[in-house]
Image (tube, rainbow, N blue to C red; front, top):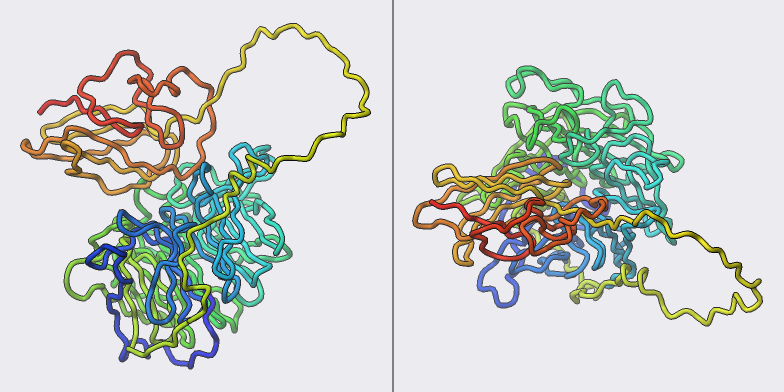
Length: 592
């Protein structure tokens, strides 16, 4: 986050005075009678108090893309290069230039596997790699820039196809090209920020968010987990910092060494703050949860040049609470933090909790909205002044912290029009321009014929495996249980329909590879006529030899191939009672 340094100085306590939080949603889209949520929000970054960007996944009413704040209100800036389900990040490179981590151009797919470069009101660059690339992109989850010619993007712990380069995947933009690197400590990167002349990054415990099974490949052993790195001479080096041990009411057994991870880092001109909480990745993380413990706030002390964990009043928080985002207050000595219980991530009805934290740990926790129904858990927070801040909920509702002062309006024409076009790097790389006539072989030596006996081995075709397979549906009373095997990390939701209308659905869950089950309960009068999955693959699935099952889209054994395909089994025969069609349909032959 870059905020103008000319903001008048004020202490953190001033933010507890006249200013207050209020719901301040963008105007409704054309044709919608009321203001609506924006869908899941991925990132919110400000260059100045009247120049901000918000990346949204969108919904049936709001297109996915980017929103811009001009000091007076929010409006949709772009319907391309936007949110992609929790993996979209924004990095300002100048007052009219920024980068966004997003999905690749079609036909390529994969959240966090593409980059868009915006400048002067247009997308001037779009980047991704084909699946078969010898130097492919891996999922990115963090971004920061120091001007237009120095940007870093970082993501999951991984390796290149040759297996020679191993570690956390990074990309660096030098003003002309993107260069890949694998930084030696292979924990997934959760955040990036430029501060004090260099870049800092924070990490999860595991190789990526929510991953507790993949092996963490460390170049150097870590008796205790190192969660902060600093860029030195082109490489990210370990920074001396260890979370404070905790043993108390939130975790009677005590938080283990690998029980705390960092989730966010943000800086302004004078302050650098980091945040996190109980680890939801790594060997100590429970399935679908986090290690019990208090949230964590860390501040860089410029006098000692060390990172110090801020002492919090832990009685204010629950054992699942984590600071999923943090933002230093410009001109102050504190920070705003988005406090989210891991069981409420993605919630559309939970009350949002924001914490105002002083440099020495004094904490004020507030639930929003103050009255009425919840609008989703706190997901993002951005402070733009001593009495100016924004908070976005997981459902896409925006709250504004303000004392009512009117900001100057940013009237730059680059922010006025809606950007709807993006260069398609996928087509450019697969369908090149017509080449000139090839005359390189005019004077080549004549060819030498070589007779070769026909190989007895038949090449084995390969396909992308189905994301879901081995689906089994059972019933217990009026509860339907769907068991399935997941091929890779993905967002999964089970939806029940009756005569084409949705009557029930599970919350969207981020599930790891392996066997899982989801269940829904119904009444006898509203029994479903069909079940279906809504999925989004978050990792690339490696091609596997075709078995004769993956490619048979019409049989009960095959649900098609591809990252979002479903295969129920490889058995012969047909499933009775199948209702609905498509790769994500599930037969429901159960009787009440």
